[in-house]
Amino acid sequence: MALIECPGCNKRISSKAKTCQYCGDNLTGDTESLSHINHIKRSSQLMNQSLLAMTMFIAGVVIWFWRGEPAEGLRANIAGGFFVLGFAGYLFTRIQLVMHKRKKV
Image 1 (spheres, rainbow, N blue to C red):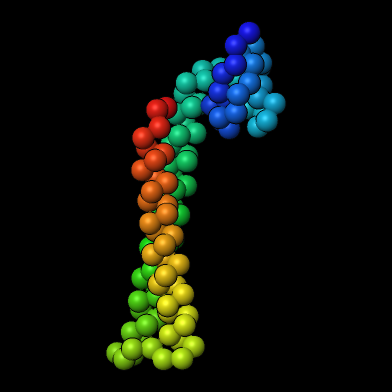
Image 2: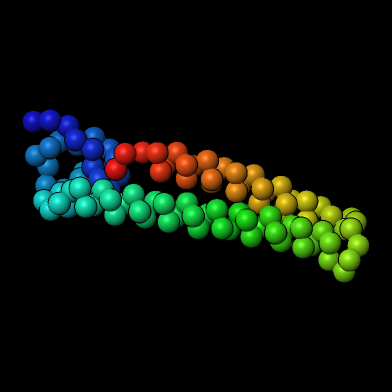
């Protein structure tokens, strides 16, 4: 009996197990295709998070320059928050995406 990685949750399980005890995935079929599918799903999730972060960044810039003049007061704080959170979130998710794509499937 050897330990293998579950294609669904990447936890170590017995090679003789028919289902994963952690996530409940069925291991009787082709585990290689399950691994590819889960890799694609994770890539899609990271791309969606990246898009959301970029949208927040752009929203911050739009709020800051609404009506042609730079923001002041509460509007400046809201715009700055969106700008910083969007920029940091975008960088973080892009780094995660690069690290994820380097993983061997």
